[in-house]
Image (cartoon, rainbow, N blue to C red; front, side, top):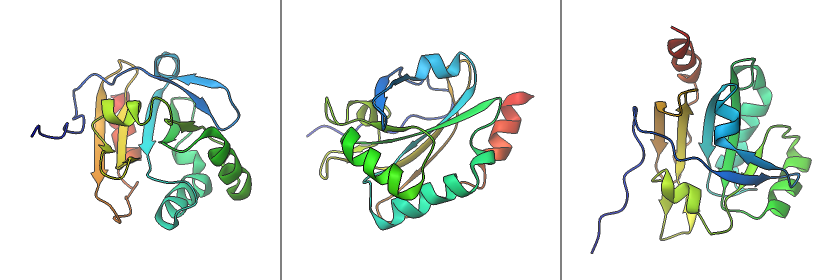
Amino acid sequence: MTDAPRPLEVGDLAPDFTLRDQNGADVSLSALTAERNVVVVFFPWAFSGICTGELDEIRDHLERFVTDDLQVVCIACDAVFSLRAWADIQGYFFPLLSDAWPHGAVARSFGVLNEGTGAAQRGTFLVGRDGRIAWTLVNGPGERRDFADIPSAVAELAR
């Protein structure tokens, strides 16, 4: 039996990826980090209670997550069509990226794919312009994440 991959840690190089957003556009981490720091938010399931609450928080406080020097992207193993329906219903105007195929490949590369459920864990990674993880938080199933430390982590990158 092999150990499950560990979530990426501060200082690790974030694996590059290109995924489709809820509108069908390709979004790549390397293109984003060429211009801004990026908050990568993995979530288990569109339409679920805790995930909706977390993404509502991002929507309701978007100025903390999208600035001239910061972009948020949220990733789940759901299909693009599910993410689009959820974004339309909830008013999410930030990228929701589909890690549906190959199933969970990006979540797995960040060490946050729950192989038992086939869904991403609640992993949050601040990726600096240098492509390295600058801050991270991984919550267990059913644990709502706290985004409160992100602004100070972003400020640290500016120093």
